[in-house]
Structures are given as C-alpha cells and as structure tokens.
Length: 382
Image 1 (cartoon, rainbow, N blue to C red):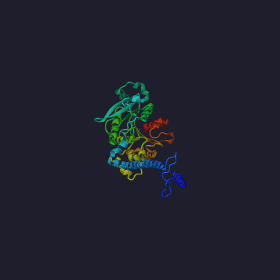
Image 2: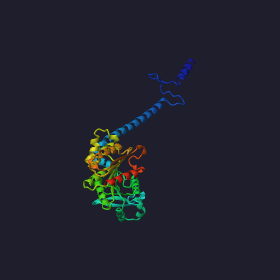
Image 3: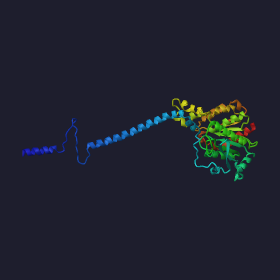
Image 4: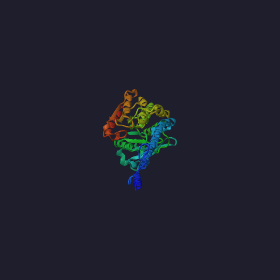
C-alpha cells in the first residue's frame, strides 16, 4: 500500500511538471486554453522579419534615390539637349486637345489663323486678333481682309510668348482679349518647334522668326505704331529682336517686357527647378555651362544697352518663376543706358498681395491705364 501511495504521489507530482533548463526556465509548459511560448516566439520572428524587410526595401529606395540625384548632373553635362529642353519646354503643349487652326474655340471669334515661312519648309502658326470694335466686321472674313484692315487707324502689338504651351495658352488668350478691347491689333505666333509650327527651337531661330513676323507686320500696318510685347522667355526674344531692329535703324515704337530676367544663366539659377541642385558642387559647370554651350544666352541685360525706344517693365512681386529682383535689376541696368537716355524707361511693380504671380498681370484693373499712359507718352517721343 505504501509503495502504491508513493507511486501515485510520484505520478501526481509528475503531472504538469516540466523540466528546467540551466537558467531554471520552464520548457514546453502547456496550460490548457493558452498558446505556448514557442508560438509567441514564432510571431515575434515574423514581425521582426517584416520590419527588417521593410527597412531593407526603404534603404534600397533611398540608395537608388541618392544615386539618381547624383546621376542627373552628369547626364545633363554629357547630353546638353536635356538642359536645352528644360529651357524651352516646347514639347509641353498645354492646353492639350485644342485646334490652333480654330482660335474662335478659345473665344477669339475676331481672329484669323494663318502660316508664314521665315525659311523654306519652316512654316510657323500665326494668329491675328483685330481690335474688338471690328468684331462684327471680322465675321466670316478671310486673310486678305485681315491684312487690309491692319493699315486702318489702329496700333499693332507683336506678342512674343514664353516657354511651354502655345499661342493658345489661356493666360495668353486673356491678354489678347484685354489688348483687343483697348483697340490694338494683336499678332501672336508660335516659334519654330512650338505648337503647330515646324522645326526645332533655338535662340537664333526664335529671334529670326520674330524678325520675319515684325517685317510682315510693317509691310501691312502703314503708318500705325507697332509695339513689341515679350513675356517671360519671350522677353529674351524681344530684346534680341529690338536690338537688331535698332541696329538697322528700324526700331519699334515701344517695347514692353512682362516678367523679364537679366540673362538665362541668372534665371536658370533662380528657377524653382534648380532648388534641389542650387548648392550642388559644380552647379554652374554641370547645369549652366551646357546652356551657354548650346548657344542660349537671352542676354536682356546686354541687349537693353543697345535699345533706342521707350521701355516698360512689368513684374509681380510674388512671381515664383522669374524672381522679382531680376526684373528690378534689369530696370536698374536699362535706366542709365546711353541708348535709352532720350526715351522713357518705366518699371511697374505689382504688389504680392494681388496674387498675379508669373502670368496673371493681365487681371490688373490698372493695366489698361498703365499701357495707355506709357504708350501715349511713347508716341509723343517719336
């Protein structure tokens, strides 16, 4: 009986007992209704594996991102065409899905679309918007009528747009409307390589296109004043054109520069696209020298020293694309220039609270009066 009791006690003691390891920790203990410690360990290992995998992927992504960041300057240096495309952005043709042959689709139902050839097989698309007072007369008229009416008693503005988009860009169309209601003929066109114009862009080609259109206007405008208006990158084309016109002694009646810069190197250094590389070692060598090597200068600061006609500069203080200080700097260069000493040089800033930024100065209620006052005094100087 004693043995049996001892045997039962041993059996009782062994029930639920677990062996101890060297650290006196229970192994393989199972409590009914609960999960064992090895199951928790497995879950922990899975969580660790997921975290490690996520960190590994994040690390690889960061390495690839840094590698891409470092590679870009070398790609630009090796292939200057990349930087050239960033300057012109002529392949960005917004607004998309519009037919440039149909300007009335953009609300310009007193506008004629046609094409000129500055060079053989280099046709460029042109819009001619007549003064708003001729709106009814313009309905259903052909190109011959538009050419003939240009010699009537209304001044003409040749508009030179900036990079990206086409002559049908919304802010451009809105400016045409403002100028048309003021009684101007407005001639706008797409440089070679822009919109539906043939060819590839270059500073020389853009300037030659503008010269060809100007001569076309002068041949049809009679004694009416012809003004040149450049916006953004178009200010570079405008000063190139006007300098050349002044050198051949056929200056325009006035030049208006909206949101101008000093030269393309300073503009590229100040452009929002350059922020991530502005302090990159060798920034000038990697990014700016390829622009110059491609023959792109747009040296407004040099050109204004050779211009002999009234000059008006418009710039918004909150311009995020071409900083306001570049427009002010250009004015400070132009104002004392010997070639401009007999002409009015005016700088009109637009306060940042107005929100006109880079391309909305046309919204200013004061713009009409600014233009009338400036061009009126410009005519008195002729």
